[in-house]
Length: 327
Image 1 (cartoon, helix red, strand yellow):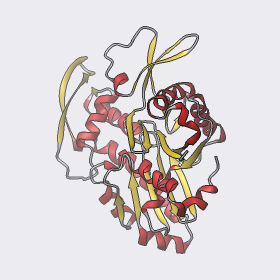
Image 2 (cartoon, rainbow, N blue to C red):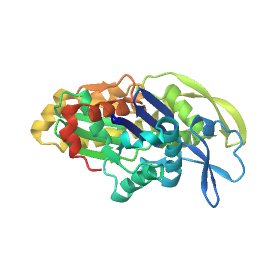
Image 3 (cartoon, helix red, strand yellow):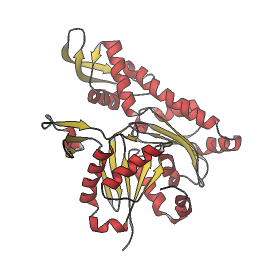
Image 4 (cartoon, rainbow, N blue to C red):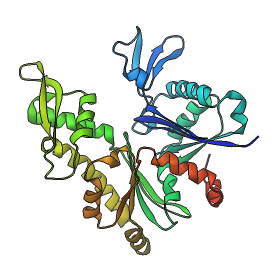
């Protein structure tokens, strides 16, 4: 039986399953009821669209900050996906690969493996996220930044593997919280996380002259009334710049830590950015000004990691490299 290879990315924001002509992507949230056993009542968009949760149930994000916080819930979700997309009788001919943040502890890696095992599959290969993008380069030293919901991964990769990699605990979720705080402090206006994310997606910008605006519903904390208020890009700019400047600092530190020859190689090959957070308006120009190196982005950054990893695990020229990746 021919081996079928699948990539599963259980990110803090979205769950993605890719391979064998399949692309499944849903918010990584579940409605869970706990009793003698744990039961997943709804998942993804269905869970988010529930206006009223069933009795004794809660909305859960099994992965937060790039770390599996609730392996049992993630395992149940994966089991549902496996049953839907990978029939049990094909499991012996399936190889599963999971991208993970750099620097996970042994316990954190075991929690990911435990979740997959609970879903019925015990042989999974974990691959650090920055390595996933190697097929997009010619093998020379290249800087990579993956802007996720929970964390941002920064590293340098080449044909021999990972030169250096690190994870910073700033991602889309942290930015949403920062936007909420800025609006509360500067406008006395309280919004929930969903509204903050909507504002970020609509008018978030690293251009200092951006004049875009969007209306959002929240609560005026002075009179405690709910109302619709127009928010401008300038008003949330402090939150945007705070988060991305911290990531820029990490990228600069990563570049400075390299031997001189590798620094020169990276300055020629440039920085590759991917992940949902890389869609921030003006990010490419912002990083290019700060680093003074070319910046390239994927046309579909939210699925770039799983697509590149699929090539990495399928192309024979990377076989020897993959054998060095621990399971």
